[in-house]
Image (cartoon, rainbow, N blue to C red; front, side, top):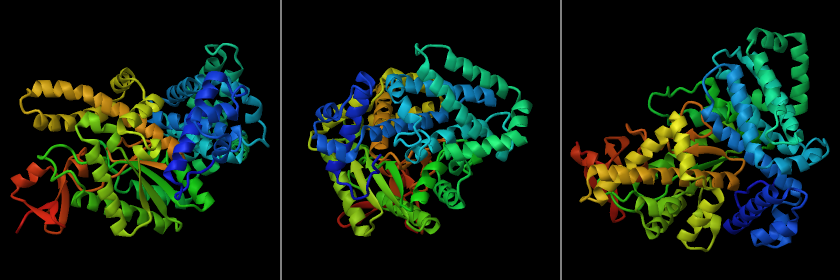
Length: 533
């Protein structure tokens, strides 16, 4: 699969996305063999030559499919149930089989290529090592987070073994005549039964035979780097986690398991000697609430946030000399019509933010937005295209929140921010009605956030994913704290920078005013609040 380039132009990135989405849709509908580059190019609205520039062969598109399935499994890992190794292994396998079900016919057609060691799309080949790292990390997480987890060295061995077994189970699944056939599930149950007797399972893993099996798997699967990464990779992830933003009640100090979903991605960049790529959906537009913010353009809150991010990139460069690059995936147009911000204000906000970056004279941070993904179309059209290609239903979002405390916390946090704005925007409306209206909007915001996240993942498939929202201890996204604040959900675009002496913190404007702070202007416009001594 072609890597996304730091210098890749928005038009080229858009074309690449269209080709990928068209190909995966055709694979799912017509199957791999029946899909030609002529079909793909026609559906993508590009020439065959251009489609082949981004994906020289259909195998390159297959690797993109592998990666998408691996990323979906990785994102789901936050929902792993509490319990034993057996319970968690079954959960991972059930999710994996559910994910590949839609693409089962394509995977069946690809079976010969997938096991051909000389093939570009070989599941054990060098082109799919990052994919293997992602999936192997989920199995390691399933074992290390279990109530009956063994020691670290035994966990690594067992995770490698289960990763290898899972490939065999997937192969069995593709060979069943009926997608609901029992063979793969019976095999999963058989392995689960073995894990239910930890002494026996670990006896095999820790003994001489287990050592030999582990050596063979480490060589054949090339997962040893993701399960035993270099010190450099660990140092980079440690620096990413150092100032992480976590949900209330979560220990700021990361557990060992918190590292596991990120080491493989980081290691892949280290192995290739490249800059480590980071993607952060953030910096949409200022909230439409004068009780929170000073205006509709970026101010000192954004400036301090960019300084924090630039400092993080500098920290990474100390551990990995090629450094790191950050794509701010600005999602203002994604949410504008739902949160009450005009598309014109979103555009002005981005232009001002880009000016801030230009003044910093740094080549490490750039912006990617909905307009870059879909080109010269109106924002309403771009939102429609985003939802058509990447969004789940509101019912699916609601169901997910009901079964996951993490997703429920995200929904509640967004609901609170929307409610605070609605009370100001609609003063004649009762608080009960405002709460009801914004609850429905919160589901839509989460739905769009998920869709934007999927597009960002497609546009930056190798990137380490960051988030401005607080995260659980173990998450495929690393929450980043941009500016000190006592509110886990407050962001620079929902607040102001309050300076008290040399210390800056993020608060709502009305909170700063209650403390007696005064507004300070820079370059003729409001910038921050300051408590005068």
